[in-house]
Image (cartoon, rainbow, N blue to C red; front, side):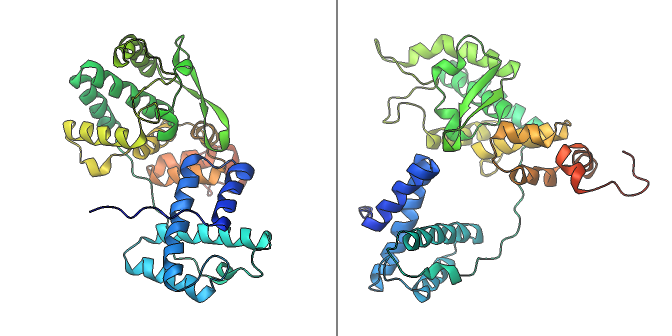
Length: 317
C-alpha cells in the first residue's frame, strides 16, 4: 500500500518551523516531529473546512478526542497538545490570529512513567553478544554499546559522532547536544579500548579512496549510521543475548547509564551534566528506580536535595 504524499506546510506552519530553528535552536529531528504533528492536525481541520487561522477550540477538542479514540497514549496526546499550544501562541504573537483556541484545552492526565532500565548483567550480555559476533559488524556494535552505556549519549549524538572526537585516545568526548550546546562526557577504559580496535578496521568499511568525517560511516544519505538502523542492530543483539528485544532500545541504555551511576553513589548534578539535561528535575526521575536505601543516600547527599529536605529524626546521615 502506497503512502499518501506528505502535505506541503502552510505559510503559517512554515513560519512557525523557521522560528523553532532560528530562535530556539531546535534540532532537525524536533522540527520534523513538529511538522508531522501539525500536518496531521491540518488534515483533520481540512475535513472540517477549517485551517490554522480559522480553527476554533471545538475543532481542536474534537481532534484530541479522535486521537484518544485511535488509542494514542496520554503522553503522546500531551505532546500533540504541547505542539498545538506553541503553534497557536505563535500565530497570536505574530498577529496571524486574534485569539488562541488552544489556551482553553485541558491536558490529559499523566502518570509519572519510570524509566525502563536493564541490569548491569544484562548490559554485559549485550556487549558479550557483540563481541561473540566478531568481524567488522561485531566490532562496530561493541564500540557503539560501550560508548552509549559508558557515556550516556543520546542515540542521535552517538551515531553522528565525528571521527575527530575519538582520535588520539581521548579520555573525554566533546558532544554536541540539543540546541547545539557542547558538553564533555567521560570515556570509560573499555570504551577507549573498543574505539581503538574499531579505528583499525573502520577504513575497511569505506570504498577505496572514500573518506568520511563520521566515526560510524555509512553510504546512506546521512553519511553515518542512522538511529533507526542502530535500533534494529540493538534488537538483534538483545536476541543473541537472550533478552526480550521489547525491553531494549538506545534510550533504555541511556537510562541504565544514569541509574547505575546513581546506584554507585554519583551525585545527581554530575549525572545531569553528563546527560545534557537542561533541568535537574528531568534527571531526578532516575532516583525513583533505585533501591530505597540508595535513593535515600542520593537524596540526602546531593547539594540540591540538602536544601529541600532534612533526614527524619534518628536517621543516619
